[in-house]
Image 1 (cartoon, helix red, strand yellow):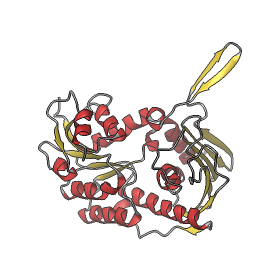
Image 2 (cartoon, rainbow, N blue to C red):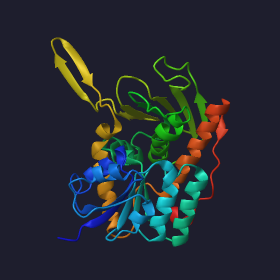
Image 3 (cartoon, helix red, strand yellow):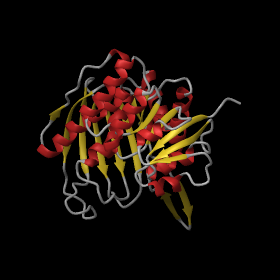
Image 4 (cartoon, rainbow, N blue to C red):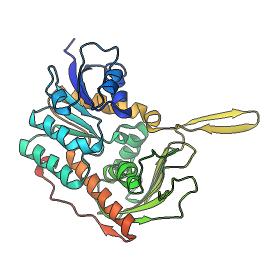
Length: 337
């Protein structure tokens, strides 16, 4: 049997702890050899029962720990740039949870570092690309069977928002997944954003503009609408419907348990993203590790991370100003095709 890939996990919060659980259990071929978190007690709890894992406060110290062959970044977004650049500088493949960086300028610095290296090492954690329903919709659109896409209708609902959530985070955090999914499904860039703001729900925290309707225009003339509602009080719901010249197709409507009993039918909805996309996360990490063992990266690139952040920034500006905002993008390096 080949040697296990040694992974440094940066961040021991909700997402980082779930990846620690995933590596070596749900996904084989690797083991966690180092973990970093400013809260070392939390880091120790995340790796409890796993032998040979060094615990660090510093992300860079974990990256430099013995046996590290790849890096998984699941820390708060403000720490992403330093961690990803440290991995790239050492020639280590890295999977970075979204966003790649807190702003487009920082994301572009990561793109530049990788472009100067001349090879891809960075994969960004847009796990929806690994979901079976999204993959089926992508294959259908690519086949041309339904003709040219005209519209993309998206829905993104959460049960409730975390205490720190702001109105702009509905776009920069939640809708960022729809930004990447739209770019990937359509193979077009998003060129402009408009945000509609209905009267906030009575269940939204005071001052939070929730829900929102976000409209994207693409380089190929497709219009994408995203309903984002992070305090629905119902469940975690993600849906996407493509309307094309010769028909349409959608996903998400049947991704739940339908219970029929005593003359009633009830649909059981997942309550968070780790449940809804559990299989997608497993496939994502499995694909990343297969590429990492060869010293490369696959899947969503650093450029995809930059482009998503640039679109999200335009969306936040549109939310703030109430106007249509065009997306400003840097020139795409040759490395990314």
